Length: 325
Image 1 (tube, helix red, strand yellow):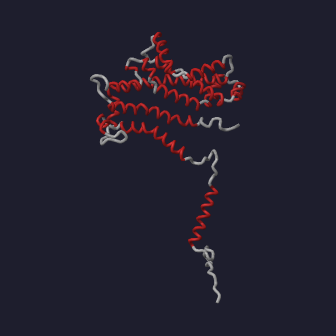
Image 2: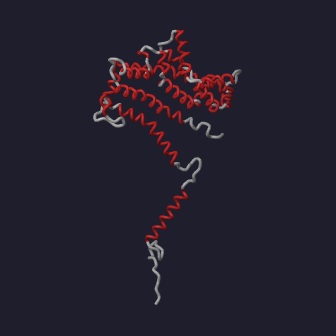
Image 3: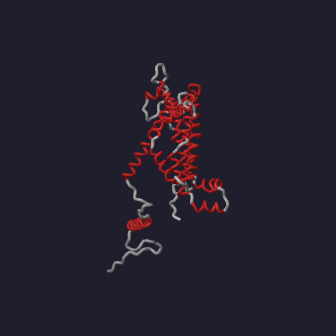
């Protein structure tokens, strides 16, 4: 007697002698091998994930966002809620909008006055520092003149000197000129940004080709027209970077206004919030810690908004020089 092996039906895709489970495993193995073939190899542009670096990045992220989260959470509490509830969680009742209204109207709306003062110092000081840095950096990068190396050494030396070391001499100089306790005592020192000048110098040397400027001059373009129509668009990423650094430095400036300004009507936000904080330590003073926290939150909102609006100009310059011509 002979035994015949089972054969697959004419319309079936299963080969003879193979069960459906074996066919499924074979198909799964084929799919996995194809996925492995499609997976890109690990290169400098496609690095292998690193667990230690991921953990370090996570810790840095938590360290950065934790103070902001604490500020947002506590800005929703009143004076009693700040003392009775956990610092990293909300209280039973929310007073966020009430705190904002009280912050803006407390002491006849002095917070709004401090905000306008800060905007004045930033617009005049940081804006002027950016303009001077762009003009100076472009000139130092594109023009050759005697003493250029000496200017470079002076700029590097000025970058290395901390601003606090120059605060007292600056105060004595402005005091002799009678400019203390005026906005000029904050605006004029803010116009000088050695780091911004150095940054624009280096950026202009790489971003503005000399051949392009020479071609414009051969075509009869003047120096001002060449700068505004050709060089300035190329310098936009560096300009935005210097503007952001100058704005943050002027917005957060505390020590210079502290020694220059004595009139509360000319306080920036940094000195104003510190004055509110000092009320709790004076005899008969009212503690307004809820307003201090809410005011601190309102203080950082404009900086975050400006950074988000100018981020696309900043990111466009991160790849400058990455393409080899």
